[in-house]
Image (cartoon, rainbow, N blue to C red; front, top):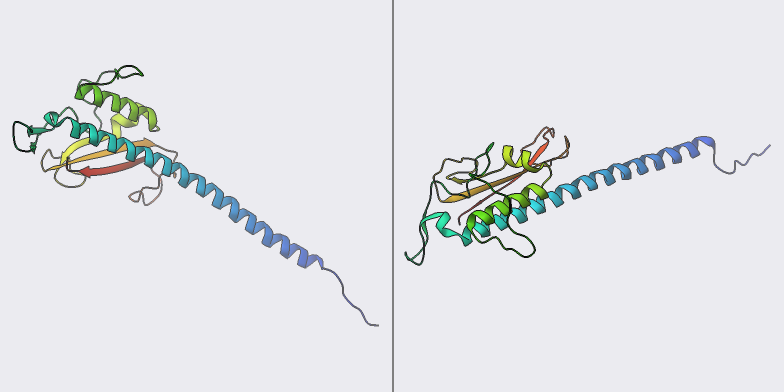
Length: 188
């Protein structure tokens, strides 16, 4: 008797179902990771914009940053060892105030601009004032991560809160930090 097996066997159907399931699970994992990367990207872009804004505020107020400023001197020189723009880690700005700016009022003084910037940073970065006070700093620095009040660079580190394992910082090798940071060093 000649038998012709036609159609699929049950084993072939199960193998096809297994391969399809593995593919779908891989796509779901990829989707979750892409959401995490997108959120990290959004928060880092906010931090970059905030740092750039602070740099421009500092440059617009050279009298608060430099010991000698133009036009009295040919050029700005000598960073001050203290400034209203400097903020140590685990501390707040000296004599902070509420932001005076609104839709009809513009912050005019360097202190008002700084305080409005700080309010904006606390509102836009997750973690608010707690993380802003504990992990954000702005300082005069001679080398990366060294707030020694020397050198010709200003280092700005902004921090924000994330859930555990969601921070994509290169320094977080075991992926357990709940605080992400963005650091930039500039010569004003």
